[in-house]
Image 1 (spheres, rainbow, N blue to C red):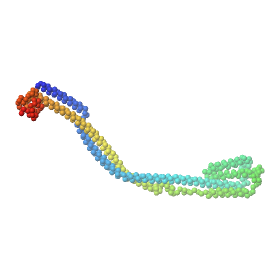
Image 2 (cartoon, one colour):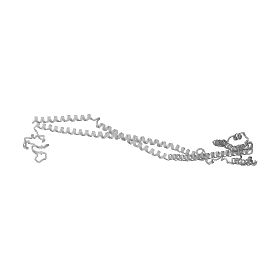
Image 3 (cartoon, rainbow, N blue to C red):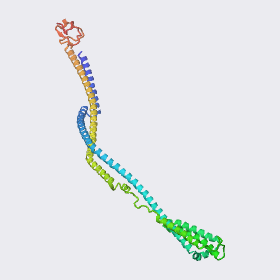
Image 4 (tube, helix red, strand yellow):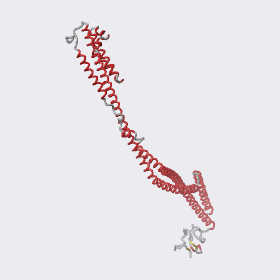
Length: 417
């Protein structure tokens, strides 16, 4: 009996040792697989999370302070900024209005100047035409008065020697040529008109030629008389004299254009941006706008500075929240690792406790077999089998096990009273 119990206990002890070695190997492998101790990692993560929470709280306070300062700076800058913006808009609007008025005035002045220049050209043309016509008429008067001398000039004598066709061509062609040249030179002043008036003298060449030819007996008189009455030349001279007076009178009566053809009001409009009351108003408006911008510069600078500070505080808060989120994630990860490790340790401890209980039971059983007493009783009851009765025991015993002999009939755990 004793040898058999020792063998059983030896086998159980070997099994427990093998299980412990396997558990130790598994724990060693699990520890080697982890980058760090879960408990230490959890402590470090908790410390970092606590620090990150403090940083978040500090950053939140900074954000709130920065937001408060920015709100105050924005409210303080709102009035000066609006005033500067309105002043600058009024100055721009006034400048635009004055610029438009000045442009319109310049256009109107240009139109008036063009009209004045046209009037001057018309006046010069009238003067040239009147004087040229008058001079031409005076030439006609001189020819009519000195008709005999005129027809005796070498040119008329030479013209009388030509046939009628060539004489007509020379007179008409020469007159047309002089008229064209006079028209082309009309812009040069009275030159064109003078040439045009001299072209009228060509009209006397043909009658003078005919008169010479009649006097020489080479042609017959047109009116049937060899010599016109003396009053004819006087009448023609008087007619040309009247025409000369009319030409000179037209030149003298021509109205000169006004020299001051641009109104003062229009000139003032043309200089609205540089002189006059409107220019002073514009200068005053721009000065007020600059003053308003100077007054708004400092509040706007404070608003910009506080806005930048608020952005920096928000970035710091975002970074602190990121660090907190990372630390909390590490904390949760190490918490899960630590819980798993604790669970494995508890399971290992439970297995060790069960193994120890089995070893204790085996040890007690071995001791019972060695002493010849059943371990289910406190007294010395022989081991089962064989079955024994109370008379065989001879003393009161306490049942502490399964009562294999059936000694506790009433079930109060006290047998053989």
